[in-house]
Length: 331
Ligand SMILES: Nc1ncnc2c1ncn2[C@@H]1O[C@H](COP(=O)(O)OP(=O)(O)OP(=O)(O)O)[C@@H](O)[C@H]1O
Ligand SMILES: [Mg+2]
Image 1 (cartoon, protein in one colour):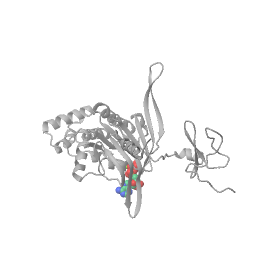
Image 2: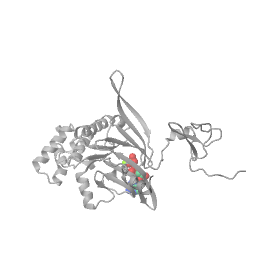
Image 3: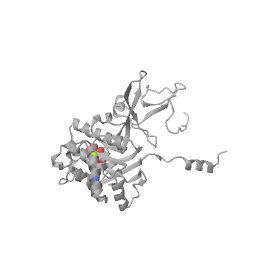
Image 4: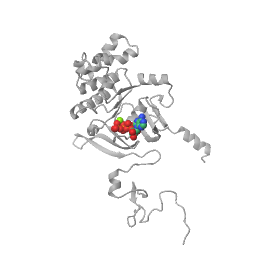
């Protein structure tokens, strides 16, 4: 017989949400107050990223992407929820720990090329700068900077200042700066926002190379609709929540040849919520009250209109309610 204590012990032994993930965002809420108006930039966002992943985050303007990255990079503190990166609990860091976290654990690349690089330093000096702040000896700094610039395909830019580099070269040097202290994670917020399509693809390929060659976990926010071709996983954010994911997998055909398939998934959050795409809602005029029906292998969603009624797996009956059913008096 299971006692209450058994059940509690069992519960305590259950793995916590995202226990094995490198990055855990659990029901993140960020509310901004501006001129007495409340803006909910993050509305209970859940996200897990494993060590070694390369994840793209996409979403309409204002959906909360930069807010999320500001939280993950330790620049901003969420209003509620839980956020952990590796061993760091980002809700409970002291200012000194915040500085250490930003120096040792993570690197950043921003959209504005000017924000990433110091204009009067050469590419090598820019990459060496974070190492100087960390107290690394000069010779070692220069060697590491040279090695990184070579890896990123911009070794020929070593002695040039940012003003003498193209936008794409600047962003590749910026990736070098982000990698200087060998962080476990690199966050990039629209690193290709100011670049044309071809250059943008080069920079995304560069992030892929970093992920593959150095094993660095990369989270990149982008507007580039072609991004899902460069990454295994694309997470879409809508209204401050993760709403869907595109996962790319390599499959082997019967004849042994390989091909890549991309599949889109909706995200079911921990409270059981799922966002229906707008086009689905519009096509069937779904709004407000809908009926849910449990089928043998899936759940269906029906509009609340007469004559459109779900067929359940067992019979033709309409489900009474999707919540707890209550007996009404008979007439
Ligand atoms: N400091 C702030 N004060 C008040 N509101 C803010 C602040 N920063 C962001 N917001 C609001 O929060 C919401 C999310 O903003 P965020 O910058 O995260 O969006 P985004 O997805 O990065 O958009 P974009 O694609 O345009 O960069 C927006 O409605 C924005 O106006
Ligand atoms: Mg943004």
